[in-house]
Amino acid sequence: MGKGKFLLPGSFAVISLIFVALWALADVISLSTSTEILGIWATNNNSTAIVASHSWDVTCNNTVLVAYSYCHTVLGVDAKGSGTKYQSVDPPGDVHTETWITYWDLPAGNYTAWCATFAEADGETDSSSDTAYFTVP
Amino acid sequence: MKFSLSEWRLLLILVALTVVVLVGNLLVNLLWHESPKVTSLNQGKESIKSALPVESGNPPADEGETVFGEDWLSELVESSQSLPTDHPDVEFAQEAMSYEAESQTEENQAEQTEQVETSEIPEGYYLYEGKLYPLVRVHEFKLPDGRIVPLKLVRGKKYRILTSWRNPDPRPLTPEELKYKEELIEKQHRLIQEMQNTPSKEKRLELGKELIKVWDELGNLPSGLCVGWDSVEEIWLRLPGQSEPSEVITIDLRDY
Image (tube, rainbow over all chains, first blue to last red; front, side, top):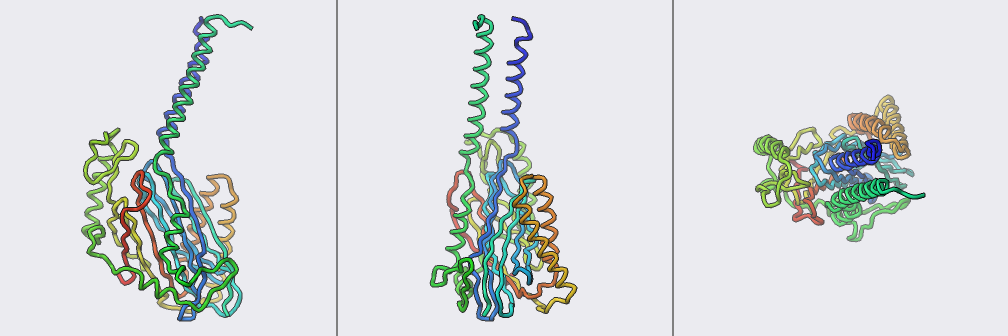
């Protein structure tokens, strides 16, 4: 059998082995976010509280830096951002949940609350949002 | 069509290689998936819901529903624990900072270690996919006023960190500020929607960077109608294979 006949299976084997090795060694990261408006309430001080749960969850096989941020918006009226926060995460990963309660002095009327979460780690991104409607009597 | 002996050999070699590659891929895949997976977000949400007194006669509002007249926040404040600054897992300032420098040096050394045997895990470390990582991490927690509190967090435990902020100078926004804020609000809304509809990873990253800038700008603007906020932040550093935290520790930084 000539040498040429081994070229195809040889290349196939080498390329496959390189592929498997790269796959095993590569950074594997899974990132997801979640946003849920838990409730909109009136406080004793006559302000309105928007309560939302903001989560991010990262699974990784190497240490990564996660940048994340939240925002509460009363659409067309006002918004408050949490500012960007950073957290270093070691394998196998972290679960991070924040219940953020913002208080608003809103005049009577109908409003839409829109809350969002964004996270980034090692080039992977994810965002999520939730909307709720409410009335201030 | 008849194969000669050499052609049969060639075919067998190809089949054998394919089997090797497939088994290899399967093993890599299994090893990765057998590692502790992400605890579902729903579980996280459930824990948060259980942390809030929403079930004690104060159900949260569904979409489109309004609930007023309940001061559940005071219950939340009452239910929280006192500040455990003397807790062995929580150390502040200089001590924690010096520990961080020390642990990072150790971490660098540890990361250079290849394929560590399970029986050789030194105290204060855990093994993950052949590498050693420190069990304790110093988390630089940023307070609302910008100060940094270094918290020594132990892997395997869950930390509930309470913070709050009150607007020191509540005032209506000027027409210029209001206009600028409205532009930012519209922009962030558009960016998120665009991100959620974009399949390209690079494009999402680009949009995300822009979104962070917008949110940072929003954070720097006067707060207008927002008079304050309270936060319950939960950080759980999972150990490999861990499905529940070994301990839940509350750290109250509201008056820190």
